[in-house]
Image (cartoon, rainbow, N blue to C red):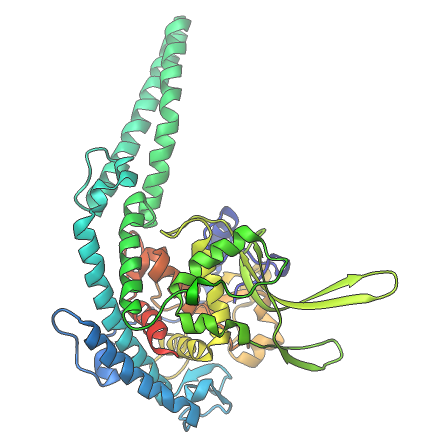
Length: 490
């Protein structure tokens, strides 16, 4: 899961300047260690056949979606009875969906593959239904006439490509005008015409702010985060949520916020409250029943309910199931325990500052409140990072110290734990839209980045919305898993 600043982490997984440098360094080292070929078809699998359901045809109705949800729930209901493992490594977990391979890593069982495929099949139906609703919204309110888009393209646009082309063209046009004016100013100054040189310089300076604004918008268009993208993404986000709402109640039950610690920060809690609109109501109703597990300094095992503290992230947003805080006085040491969820103010996607982060970080808590969420995510991750011969894709550096990266990745879980690689960040590459999705979370099997990055993608539009917008590649499997999980897990 995401690591806090104190543990050496940064924003998860946003692109700050420091993160960009670390990613670039990690990419260089990854070239030295990556030996697993990319799996070109991994993100495009149609789950219908493997789930044993007919392919979707024609307009998708709520009744068609319900049939697939019921089928997936019937498959998932068998997990509580335990399933025989067909993986020969030993320990088994996640309701029989995964088991350890001979290197200690989690591998999907045949039952796990069946459950994950059924869940994705339900998600595919929800995606189709949601995109029908989004298309209706887009037809009524085209992004080309939205005031946010018109701020950059006054005459409007008929498509994202047209908008992007205009913004990029305007950026280059302004830069060219600035260069020409500055050259003229330099020439006039060399000729001794100080007055005209000053006027030309002033004209060029007046264009700089507009040029910077368009340059930033052009960069956002590349990241699928432009004004056009945000309008379009909001339609998809609303469509997906509306399709889910046809099947189950979404958002805070009765509008009442989940319980948070009294030391939580109000503005940050408000950002979390907005993010919780994209979670099922019955999941949120169970939040207060969640009991964290930890071992104290005297090796006593604890499992109890502790308060959730929601605060602003100073550097990197994260969720920690258990934080042990000690306050030292002259006479005693006062120890308190709480779960901590930190949220930054990063404005990415369509949901507003910090809300995308809130959606992501609460996902780590949801994995614990609803263990089947994590079970399905672990199957998805293992399936997509396993070769045909059963071996795992090679670990590649993500945010890793130079010395650790030069030493190369661990081959087994036991080596990984011995070298304490959890203090670094390694990923298994597939064709995930966002590479961070494939993060190996050490021996912590209660969490992954599959569900959390997927929630950001589907509802905030991060990573091209998992639809392939901008520079991002599409990942329908990941999108279907997220929507299916939200619909199926009870």
